[in-house]
Image: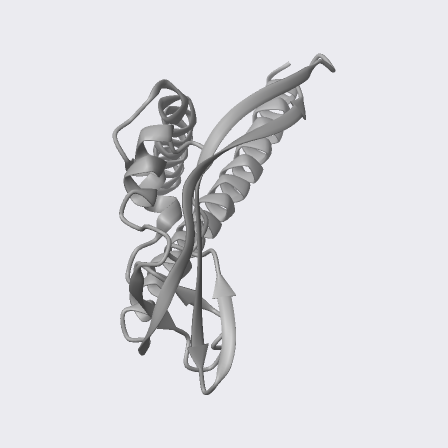
Amino acid sequence: MVRGKKEASMQLNGAMQLVLVLSTVLVIYLILRLYFYLEKARQTRMWPTVTGQILRSTVRRCISKSTDSEGDTVIRHYYEPDISYEYHVNGQRYSSTAWGFGGISRLAGQQFCQSIASQYSPGQSVPVHINPKRPQEAVLAAGRTAWLISVTAPTSKARLKMILPFTFVVIVVAVAVLSFLHGGSSR
């Protein structure tokens, strides 16, 4: 009987180790991805600028359709700034819709998107930060990571629904790692 409990305990310990490893890999992936976005946003501050012209600046209401776990169609509405501009580099005309590096999160509210769009009006001359290696890549707001800003903008229920479970997962992984390290050191 003792041997059966010991084998079950070893199997459970193995499953816990697998969950711990997979959770740690996921957290590392998320941290590296966040680092990439922040670093790319930082690099845009060093990009040269040219003068561009705003073609359109509004807020677009979008619809997202998905299927829930029960097979029902779920329709969600979200907003995004709809800013279009053109600029010229070495006589070549380019156009873009990028405000900052990365996209605006679907969790950004209408008010947040309006605050961005209201900064620009059609016909307005604006500095456009261009990637010197790829002039078709440009942003209006250098150094800004649009996704991170929109997720961390004043919270709404939708943002909390996304951020709280992620925070819970990070805490659980941290506790599991600490428990594993503490348990491993007492053997």
